[in-house]
Image (cartoon, rainbow, N blue to C red; front, side, top):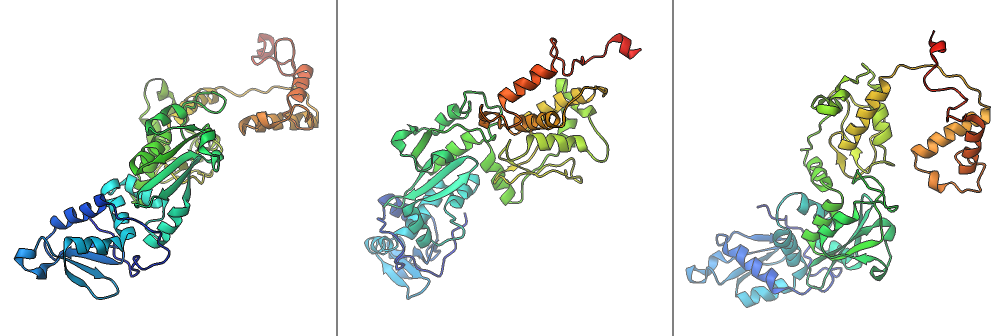
Length: 401
């Protein structure tokens, strides 16, 4: 297992480092790690390394230690007590090692994500611990995650909706079990089912204010399933993307009809689908799939921090419906609209598509999608059967002749 590279700054003497106590668990973990190494094989921290002192003789091989600062003279033949004192002076670096090597563990998405939260791959321990003492905030979709550190170097995390940033915990519903997040993501703020967990419709009013590293990761992955895993794959250059054509070719049953929908070289139908479903206003993922491996789409893929590696079930389901609708033969319908009424129809479509209907005040009749103004248009243009302009959707047999 790789060790963090030694840094030229000895964090023991850096005045930015907050006062950190060296917990016995961390010190015991250092001793265990050294016991698993050959004498002289160092365990590296930021700014120094420690090893069993190979020069101490066979009888001292397991009881004498060596500390090598990056800048300064080495200290040799240290007893266990002396090593504890030396590491206590460098508690920040030791607890940082312990937090990621022993508490977090595996070199995978969880570790990468938790290190990303505090910029552990780009900042020194001193800088990070000073920032953690104040609280480091990161956005993940609609989440606001705040990482802090205790006086023992332990990481604690506050996970909540971004809209609730700064709200006292006592004013929110508090949760401690990360699996409770399964209930929080089911419905939006209006009580409607959320079929797409990465839609920007996560309800707020709750907080996980005191999670450890593993639980914080579990809560985030429960709220936004597989987003950390795919984000990590992308960072490692291992994101496996499945494009539109491949996804549609494997559809079967009622979804098999989607395979018949192909508009030729322009693939404009797929652009329409992506524009409708994969915009930032509809999904927080960043679309990485195209029509096929050689053919990208002409619409923006979004700016989300986590990638979308294939058309999701919502896209496939919507495409199935649109496949059937687009199979209809176009017809010409004639009815009269004033210029303002044409613009109003456009306003209504835009407002519905952008989800702005609830934002339009009832008294604002200057807004085309205003409810009263829309009802007036319906009263004027619809006949008793609900046909726009009195024109039925299906023409009469006389018209067909």
